[in-house]
Image 1 (tube, helix red, strand yellow):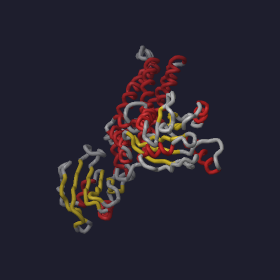
Image 2: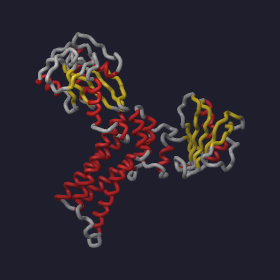
Image 3: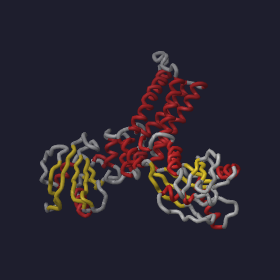
Image 4: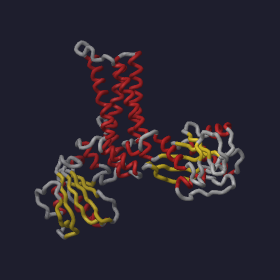
Length: 442
């Protein structure tokens, strides 16, 4: 019996005390081994029926009483026979049950993610839905939970399939013309138009991927600007508690402070940074250098301005962020005179304009819609979708100036990249890398 065909066993619950703990088995001997631990269960139990059972050790002594569930393959999560023992959540008890199962020579300990990997290999899940299982376990915001659930229900898979299928049909038409020009005459008509439409579809999917990545890791937003602009007071107001030290003396903030909030379900990490000025002290200068470094890595920089600044100063501070998107606001509007500036006015002290600022920041980060309306996308997905979009861009150009062979080759590369997302083109090494991040009982 090969390792991949053996029955596997693992604890499906966390190794901590709780009300319930679950031991999971999957494979051809799952029922036989499960009944060794719960001998009172019928030899042919009804699938998906919960049996109250006594769990015993090797000598037949009772260890616990709990539920025994049998799922007959292929109508199970993994596509194989699956047994779950639901016992009381004592870590020591569960280890005893697992050790007892592993004493059987037909059983080995499951590798990380192996239950879900078997579900993928047995056709129960495509790769995007398999990865969504780990995303759901790791989700740490409402938007991440909802987006992972969308991925698990097949939202990302359907979007990829909607691009993959017509792309495969186009590739088949072109290959048919190249291989059998007489029989497939006319199949390559309007190749350029078809490629252009598919490229637009790929770019839309890539834009959606950007939002999915934002939900996965959370957004990063930095408040920056000159000293005494009210950044720290605004930071405290946005966070909802006094996290940053506030004082009238310029240069109070010497290092970047951070706090995590959740807005409309989206996890946002806010940074309060050292104020920028020309002649800071030595320690303050280190904080300013760190501010400039931080600004290059956030998703949005909010430039908070004190009263009385000039346009030249605004432009100078904006240059500090490089290519990072910038939102410019007038701070301390509670003490500033009303001006004709079109910029948004806020006051961290009174709260004026803060709700509108938060909505504006979410709008800049998200670009419309709601964070919960997407499927999570990993860096792996985003890279594959980017390569597919780039290949279709080259195919579109080639359709105007080059041969059909070149266009077909680029379309083939786009298909390979999409296959890495759906799982139709995947190596053992890639599967190892994907499922390694799963917990062992999943």
